[in-house]
Image (cartoon, rainbow, N blue to C red; front, side):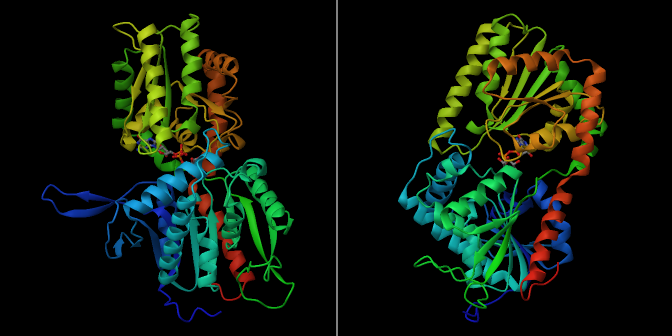
Length: 497
Ligand code: GDG
């Protein structure tokens, strides 16, 4: 059971995610290079990566693209190539058309295909192999998200010396829903290969623990799960340094709510250029009394249709007037090759067209709709320009847009309407919390937000800002890695980070 046949690598801290934090760019002269893609996760992990020998394992963003590992500002970038077949089956299929809808409360019906599952196993194994090859003896490995849930177990089988963390960025569903999955036991076993499994909400961690009890019969105590080193159930073996029959390793399953690099959002919001741009946006919209904003990947979990329904009814009833209010909706193109997303786009754009056609005038369009992605500066200008921010997700792991809006509002103004089905609502209690299914309630809350006096807006925003600025993404990663490292000392030969 030693890993002697597996070559070990040189990296002490290894992050594994479906997508690498770099994008391939083609220069004007036709040469290709790589640019760092900005994101909270990279920002938070960069310092840790620099302090230790850090590597990032993942896919480069294009099918069949093979390239040698390279260094990008102190991070070793190690590719796992994916073929067009992998992308269709492992990624668009199993990850985005089976797991995504299942984990988001079956808002959309999940599709179960056995060949997608085969591809998911195959690709997860390749990620595990690449990670094993890059990791030094006793390294700390942190696997990200639902596309890679089998990697912890596969990696432990290859390399029992590693300390393995996993973070699930999306919800973990209640057992009554999770149990639909034909491969529910294999996924739970895959995750239990980790030493620490992180979730966004307390409820996600307890849903997972319940699935473990129901499917494996293991004992859970608080945040700890006792995983027998030798599993009695026939044909199943849990790997690890086997000491004696009846002993177990403990796995921690706990919530670590993710956040953003709040200071950098605030700093951008404070630049004169961005503030000018915010004023310009309002002017270009015709300086309406109220600007409302939605920013989402175009995804059926985000409740965009519910938001439009509430807004359309308020216009129809004359309780809002298109002369006074504009809703800016940024719908970032997403998963455009998955059927459910094509249907969603048609539905949303039909609704937007109807509302604009029914209630718009030559001078005033009720919805300024944008099927685009924008640079960070433009997003921040939009946050500053918006009196009311609408986050109406039907289910969302966290929702970083809500936190970004708050981080940008150094002027202590603006009202956040936030769905209680987004993980962010556990922390952002002074937002106006809504149930997006309750259209009448949502309509009342929109009117309440628009009419809210300045003093109330400021009091709420101040309290929201305290929370977001204190609990930023570096706090999140530090806390996760602290717990992970404490498990390393528990085990045998883990290295301290
Ligand atoms: C998953 C979980 C969890 C969007 N449009 C543009 C743009 N964005 C940025 C936002 C934000 C990010 O994308 C979206 O993050 P969310 O958290 O809102 O949602 P998901 O993409 O579904 O993320 C979610 C998250 O993982 C982290 O764990 O919170 O629950 O579903 O940062 O600002 N950024 C730019 N242009 C755009 O047009 N630059």
